[in-house]
Length: 369
Image 1 (cartoon, rainbow, N blue to C red):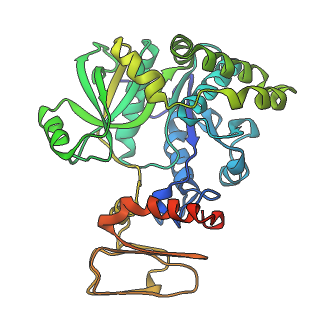
Image 2 (tube, rainbow, N blue to C red; image 1 turned 180 degrees about the vertical axis):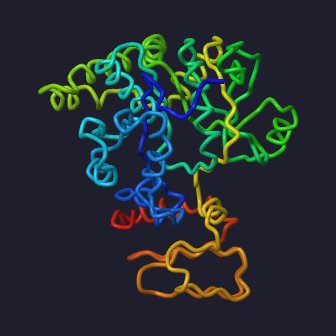
Image 3 (cartoon, rainbow, N blue to C red; image 1 turned 90 degrees about the vertical axis):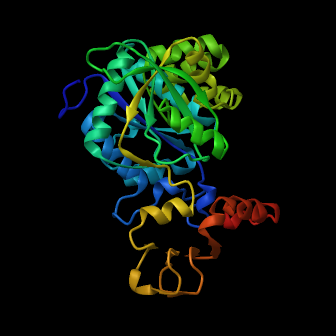
């Protein structure tokens, strides 16, 4: 395996920080999304925790955050150690391919073709630091060999909430013996299919983490979606100069809106160009209140002394400032108390919270979103 304990030369960690986290409404909102929140009670937001996890691998100077213009100042405020040029702000959401592709193009402009980037979402929770770091180091070895590399998370259950990546033959890399060819990606399956996947031992969760040489990524994008690639390169060429705003305003709105999975990972995997390294650390995308309840020891976010439970085991309570919350006789309840909005549901219905957001939007209540 590759050596550990120091930053990886030529490696840059890209953190796409977007999305409104609608299944965590009203805690997470469009103007203050979940990556800006401390959801684990550690005193660090999910974004700050992501940077803390990547700093030993990339150093402060090797971090690049891509976020919306609306959130750029909040991101900079939470990460004062980053220079202004390390926060790339998008005028509007164009999905993950544009965000990661922009970072790749800017990195090539600044550092040349040999730079390796790793893309890691801003709103995931990971424990098992040593295992995570070794996985990334192995991934960089495979990326330097020319592969687009994804991290396959060890599945702890046949979940229907995640996509899956199927492992194939070993790449045969001495310095990254765990790296394997990707045999294919699968969208979220039904429960029976997921159980069958896990029984084979060939499938892992696809967490959307990618490690790749920036030039390799841009070359693949040029082959798959040449207009998108050309637009990102044009923007990156102007990024650190006086014409950035003019070029952004002209080019960005016309960029194809597509996820990196569909733009690069799936077609390149079919051609044999994608590898997977196994990640045996604990990972959670904090996708809803049910998963948040599992992460929170005691099931309370906020002041525990403001919460009272009576015959309400398994309940999750997010306590607002200055109010107490009492839950009686409702096991697995979810009560979220925020200024201006209260949510009451159950852990079993956590995935349906997005419908509440859609409902308020349909009523024109943008102030709640």
